[in-house]
Figure 1 (cartoon, rainbow, N blue to C red):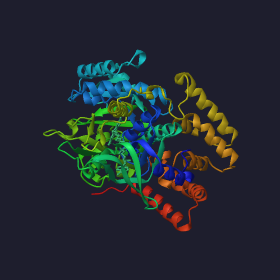
Figure 2: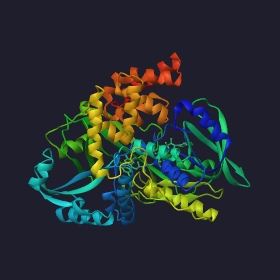
Figure 3: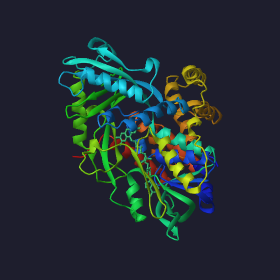
Figure 4: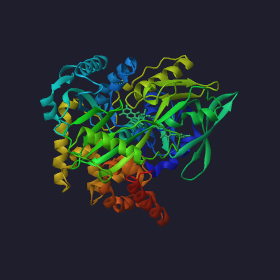
Length: 540
Ligand code: FAD
């Protein structure tokens, strides 16, 4: 079954009529990873997501595939080693989407990091994560640091560490993992909520579901049910009556986006803020983003809001570190807030809570995978599948280490990626399209770029964004404009000004492909315009 929104009803028929080995609830990176691992081991897999895929935390992170340098402060060596090693695997399987990114870690007079501690921490980080060759950390003098990033405050600067990380697009990573699972036979659908469970002899054997689009209700039957709902895991554990004293503690993390003209960073920087926290400032195409905060959260999980205090905190931090820019509220072009699903530990401050994952199995057999990080998604899936295989007394090996994600089929990424971007440039020029979009396209879609350009040509479309919209509907399960502008392309966050000019073109493609009537069209138009406005509306 293709990952095609125009065939959603067929997927729904299949999901209701089949008996699955494993039902996964939650279409963030955790659920996506489990679906790919399970289906590639030969299990019959279904996955449901109550919003759009990746609409929870998995589109709201710092978008780094990283070992978590700062977790060394909490002495979480095992976590740093596990996820640090995973970076190279993620890069190999999706080199267009998980790309090396050098990070600058400045140390200043009176800061919490000195030359010795920075050097030791980065050395340990490299050792734990198995970093080799030229990627190993370097310590830079003050003048070399300023050459790398001239915007840094010169006064008090002592030098920096320069080390290797990876950047990604979290939502696209999630979607490519899901698409890869679908290509291997998983049955996956968005906008379906699990509202309860079905039991036989007190054991969970499926879920009661509701289609969020049509409000119809149905059941899905499976031998195992996995709760991979991130910040929502306790809600399902409560329905299963298995919520015990180990619970989630949600913390909110905010990011701001400003234009590159206002914060012309040459280089990603990870810096110390006076209160002991660390902030990233990351250039990305024509913008830079800054994050993150870390505050306890108990509000609405679907739409965590950015408030003025969050904005002030981040702007102050940036203005302090890069004194020539002096950013204010007016410079912020977009923002997002995400919720970290951390596992509570008595007596610990939120920034000290572990970012490790934890597996719970209830008396009814409901398997919950809680906590964790985007970077460690493959390992979390492996733990769930090991548990299921043990339960079934079977051995089926994990294969995901070698599974290329959709769009990532470059044999020798370091050699092939840039020539491929060059070819895309030529093709764009032949099609009279802006060849500067080659980077954007390849980093989003990898080798699938050619298919999108074929759609552009075959359908005689007028703009690239229309071809992307067609692709998102027919191959990536998008059913709303927000699915497209936010999680399929990242345009909402990183090119919000362009979005306004593209709404009508994209609306027409969605209307024609999904058969929208006028009221649906008007609703989608308004929703999208409001979304753009909300990016810079901050609560008191
Ligand atoms: P989610 O992505 O939230 O997915 C759970 C899904 O379950 C949601 O989409 C939700 O709609 C769905 N759901 C809930 N209830 C139901 C139901 N009843 N029925 C059906 N579906 C349901 N990690 C990194 O590795 N690198 C980073 O740079 C990084 N930065 C971060 C920055 C911030 C600010 C935050 C908050 C986190 C960051 N993380 C990072 C952590 C990482 O983003 C998360 O660990 C990860 O995205 C969690 O994924 P998940 O699938 O468990 O949860």
